Image (cartoon, rainbow over all chains, first blue to last red):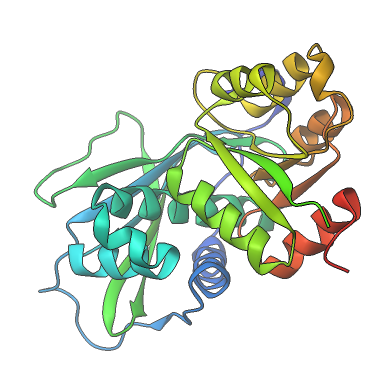
Length: 164
Length: 128
């Protein structure tokens, strides 16, 4: 994190229920601009769907927590292929990099839309998790918002977890 | 028209490729493109050779984009080379800081080729 961002420069911002809609808007914009794909609300149940690729970007400052994107491996590959064309198929590691960068952009776009945090919250570099059998535990109370959107008929989970 | 020698600095190889593709889609006359994964690698490149344009992420490991800019001002051969920051940062403060230490402009991710053209073309005199 930059030395230009002293701890004393911010006041913690409490979660706002409107952030779920802002997160959705941020995701739709990023996918539209970077992939040329229009995300829509995912119809029906997604309980039995898999999301074994997760990208996470941490938030620190006035807002502490993380933004995450989760999807299946085939969906992650489709996303990477749209971003990189043939390069994605030749280098599987690009899948994680692509998902991480999308997460970074969704987090940045979300941040810029919330005026109370835009100048007072920093983003970490993306982390990518492969596999879905894991649990995450934090030692502070937290609040989370999640939206599930349809990418070419497959679910993509977008979430923001905020430490309160 | 002379094709530009460009240095793209980003810790994501995906973003480096997207930035290069966007430059070409924007109609910028791009010739040789070199890549660096952080500010330290970029500094090594500018000390070895000259560039017509540098595009640089802000948030990177090892040496971030702001530190790279500060160091770049000490490289004689890089004086006058336009540096444009490409960042997800919604923070105006960091963008202002980048401009104050030598960046000539910035592009916020996500971006379209049209936005790239709008920001880059006036700096390199191309893509009219």
